[in-house]
Length: 221
Image (cartoon, rainbow, N blue to C red; front, side, top):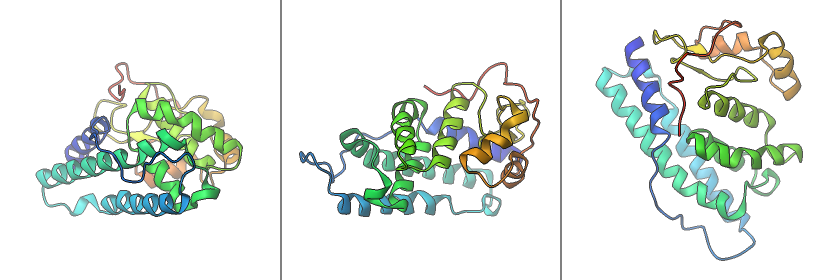
């Protein structure tokens, strides 16, 4: 099972770079977005993103079935990106007061499940809206951690775990900068759990003294 999970995580991380070049029907030449139409589209994408992830991996009957399901998930993520990224490109990261919480979560999830370059490009927009109360601070913290792990750097809030830290395929919380104060930072940004509790939720090992892997296999381009 550990080998299966290792293969799955590798597929999901490398698959983040896969995109399909299509154009969503919502993009028009209008300068002002149709928020009602966009909300419907983004909420639909949210459901698609979450439905494919609503699975108990242990129920899949074989390594081949797990890999096939992972490939299906990656393909759906890629299609979702082709629908959402042009919207952000035209209108910027949309304020949650204009589209609602669920639609805002849809934007976050699709970008979070993309690649390093996409996150680098759009995270600053999200963080700017956080300061205005128009984006979720916890989502931005998770995306910041994900970006740092992709860059081979220590994360800030301890939200990210993968199987590329120790070289044995075990799921581990990615190394944390100033781990001694991580729970203080988590509380300040709004998390209600500690990093230890988050590790338990993720079924990941946690060592506050965890070192970055010598060769960053998690880096994406």
